Length: 150
Length: 421
Image (tube, rainbow over all chains, first blue to last red; front, side):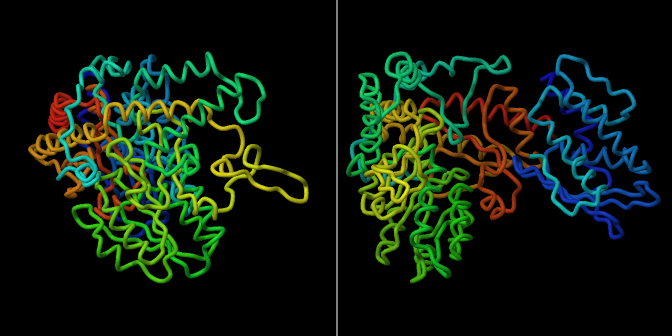
């Protein structure tokens, strides 16, 4: 069960149960849909952009604990960041998830996002953790398409 | 859940129980561990494991008989051709076809359905025509027809399913009209396990001269199949769900229909003569088999069906039904667990959801216990939408599964609940 606990950390289980920023946003400047056809996860992401910054971000949808917690923690992490900072954060987060399983993940500078370090032991679940970020990326690019992890 | 009609009609004598321990010993992979735990393989609707007989036959072909077929004058080519055509004859016998001519080897069920949708569509579909499907279909029995509709201007009509996951025969009858050109129905639902009343569907459709294609991917490894008895016009199967290799399957087509359909793909082997002005096509079934076939696949598919027949489909069906009844009872007792699909006639499939836990998380946690199940939409998104759920977890039984493995599944689910409370 140790590896499972690496994946399902308490923080992740908490965010799954009570996700942050889980709401509709009436004044969103961008809305993007995310979909993982493999597991059926669906996500609607709302972003309000002001002066090149993520002024507010929220999401709704259904998904596994990893995808829901990832979306929840992501919204906390990118709120207030410039678009370039958010993009750079995604890059670092992606490296955290996809690094070699035998190398201890370095979550430095990632704050709470570091709780997803255990995901690299579960390659099948990387897409769950990145769905929200894929969706954010398409929202920031202003693409009116469904972001897919496939 | 009563034993399937296919079982009771065809075989009145009770089947001799399976010697499951002896069967398990024939599957090398069942001896392995996963994450340090004995493998509990409950993903048989996805693909089945392979017995020694199948693995050895594949190896023997490549070690002793490998050559191209239907075109050599040398001894090996004759041996390979004989073995490949013997495989076809075995599949024909297994499905109850009138002749091996009625068996077209394909890459699997998906290609078999695409073959019919594409050629039937080209020859017979016109704007305003209708193709009748059920709400239980796998994507592979939806999308090929959508493509055929896009090309022809025909449209799909879908028979809705009930809350139990059944397709009512009267709902099917109601949607058969003068515009219906073909009905395409699954014999057994991959997502829910429902055994459809295919015989009734065929009778009703034939009253209106509507041909019926049956997607038999989930039925062939679990029930005795008799295409002549069913009366269907087409029946599609995949070897890899029948303890055989991947990449090979078969389309049964009634001879008169296969004669009427145009070729599917062009190339070598499907022709009898080619000039730049005019090509004449080969006889059945080779008219539909362009290019060098999956020769080993056809041969080993034959081995797999003979192996299944040797064990006996009635006995397999009875064994899996016992697991279904036992599993349904064990899983129903788990707090928060809901079984999706409670048809009266069901094959060995238990699709379920667990309150407050996404199926994907169930799958990951069970995997660490060595238990393999499938989670997700099972390539049947319309079924998930019908029940307003994003996905399910699905345990599906094969002939080598045991009640102890069902117990392991129940214990694994208890661990999932524990982690998520």
